[in-house]
Length: 632
Image 1 (cartoon, helix red, strand yellow):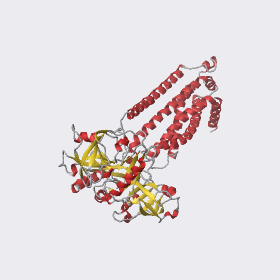
Image 2 (cartoon, helix red, strand yellow):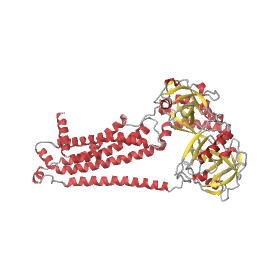
Image 3 (tube, one colour):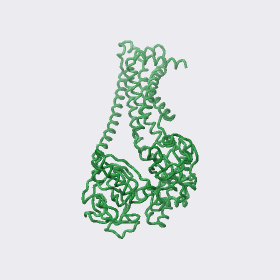
Image 4 (tube, one colour):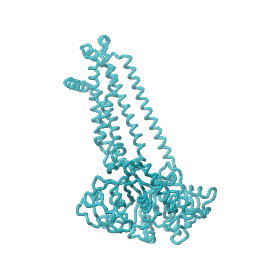
C-alpha cells in the first residue's frame, strides 16, 4: 500500500510539472469518455434498462396482419374473440389513444387520452397513488360508465396536485367524467405520454364497437413457457376461424405477436447502436492520440528510466509506475467526461425526436451508466498506457548517459508511434466514410420530392367533442365557419382543412372497388390510404393537380359524390387511361359510388424513403370528421 501511495504521489507530481501535456491528455480523454457515457446513457434507457412493468418479458403487443402489413389495429369484437379463444395468453387488454378536450376549467386544454379496458391496466401493472383503478364493470362496452383516471403529470400540472380531486367531475369532450383515481408517478404508457385514461365504455361513438372498425392496440401476457412465436401461431388459428365466420372484415387477416420491448424500441435499436459504435471509435482515436504523446514523452524520460533501472528498480516496478501515471490521467479524464456527459445527456434528450421511446423514465447517469463510464475509463488507461510503459521501461543506461537528455529515441519507439499514427488515420477514415455515407443519404433525402410545398405553411390540429357536434351538419357548419375566420386573419393568404397533414403518418385507410371490376366482393376490395380535405387544400399545400380539378364549394353534401385520386392510384387502377370521370365504390358505411374529378401528385405519407402508394381524397363537405388540421 505504501508503494502504491508513493507511485500515486510521484505520478501527480510528474503530471503537475507538465501542465500542457496533462491538460491536452485530460481534455482528449474527457471528449471520448464523455461522448461514450452520454450516448450510452440514452442507449441504456431505451434498449437495456428493464421496462417498468411486472414480468415485462411476458408482455406482448398483439395486432392484425395482412400481407406485408404486420402492425394493423384490431376491433373490439375481434379482441373479445381473441381473448375467448386463445390458448397461450394469461390475459389480454386493448387501448386506443386520441386527444380529448378538457373544458369547464379556467382555460380549455387539449389532453392526450387513452381508452382502455380494466385488464389493460392490470397487464401493465398500473397502481393508483390516490383512489383506485377501473373495475371490470366500468370498462365493459355498453355499461355507460363515465369515469377517468389522471396521470401523475396531469394531476400535478392541470389540477395543482390537489388530493380533493377524487370524486370531482371534469368535462372531457363535452361529457362529465368522475375522477376515481390518480396513477402513481412511476407508471408510464408504453408508447406515448398520456394525460387521462378512460374506460372504453365511455367511447364517444358506438361505431368503436363494430367489427368493421379496427382502431385498438392490444396487449397480452404470455403463459409461462410460451414464446411469442407460439402465441402468434395460436392467434393466427383464431384469425383464420374469424375469417370464415366474418369474411367481410376479416378476410386474409392473420395475427402478429411481438414482445413489448421490440415493439417499443424496434424502429430505433439499429440507429442507437450505430451511434454508440461511432463514439466508441472516437474514444479509440483519443486513446491512440494520448498513447502517441506518451511515447513521445518516453523519449525525453529515457534517461530517468535508465537511471532508475541502474539503481535497482526492476522492469515490473517501472511499468507499474508508468501505468499508475496513465491511470491518474484516465481518472482525471473520466471525471471530466462524466461531468460533461451529465450536461450532454440533457441536451440530447431535448433534441430527441418524438419517435424515440423513453418509457423507462428519465435518462441520466444511472448506476449502470456510471459503471460503464468507470469500465471505459479503466480500459482507456490500459489502451493508451501499456505500450508507452513497456517501451519506456526498456532502460539503456550506457546510451542514456552518453546522450543528451531527451536525445535517446529507439527505433522501436518510432515503430510504435508509426503504428499508432496509422491506427489513428485508419479510424479517422472509418469515421469520415461513415460521415460521408450519412451526408450522401441526407442529400438524397433533400432531393426527394415530398409531393407538397411546406414553405410558409403553419398547421394546427384540433378535435371536436362528439357530444356537442353529433351530426354531420353541425360538424360541416363549424368547419366552414372556422375556415372562413382563419382566411380572414391578417397575414394569412389562404387556408384549408385536412384530416391528416402530409408526413404525419396518421392517414386513414379505406377500400374501394373500381368501375372496371364492379363485381368484386367487399372481401376483394382494394385497400388505399384515405384523406378528407376541404376546398383549396391542394392549392394551400402546393400539391400539383395533374388532371381535372380539386374540390370546390359546389361539392356539397347531397350533391353527386366525388373523389380525387393520386397518380399512383390512377396508374394502378386504370393503367394507360385517364382517371377523370371514372367511378369508385368507396367502402362505408354506407358504400358510395364516387366520380373521380381530379388527379393529384403523389404525397409522402410517412417518410421520404417510402415508395409512392395509392391515395384517395374525399371532400370534407361529403365526409364530415371531428379530427382535422388547419393549414395556412
